[in-house]
Image (cartoon, rainbow, N blue to C red; front, side):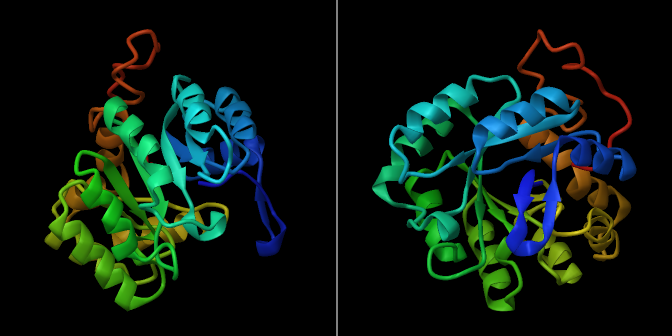
Length: 254
């Protein structure tokens, strides 16, 4: 989910809006991001169940050092990259030190996927191949173009370190195809709120043709495993100091 103001799209969501959205749709935990990482830190520190992804832009001086600083924060659980908006190739050598850092920390990277010239699935695949231990999530799994959607599924099918994320991809049956071809553990629900309606995105998974068990995997279990280390965890299990780190309660959508 995005937090902040987005006047170009006539949408916005601050911390209060995020908390209300999570409450309305029964979201137990969610990943949020914005180019202003300091703002994201304020939001995740104030909203229970909200966790951050560091927005990495290799054009900014010291971005790897800044990433390390934020990733040391217990509520930042990975990185967000948007090569389309920030204007760089996903496998630019400038990105490699960050990818190596993520491999060392065993944290995922979510990369916007589905638009030329920088965010086509095959461009992102180059980074996944260069760093086969990196956990690379194809955000929107190709977005609105069936050629890119099919390409995203192809890329994930041949690279075991690549995951598919469902938000903004309009073809519900492609979610089921992704699970069938890539496997039940590497397709993740995303809402892309406030750009998309959370209820619509949830319903898309529910009507995809998957069995109830696989729907549950996509809606929350897979993301809990990837970000928290356990498909039933309510918070990162690697942080023993967190009060709910070992909580195994009723799952909600990620």
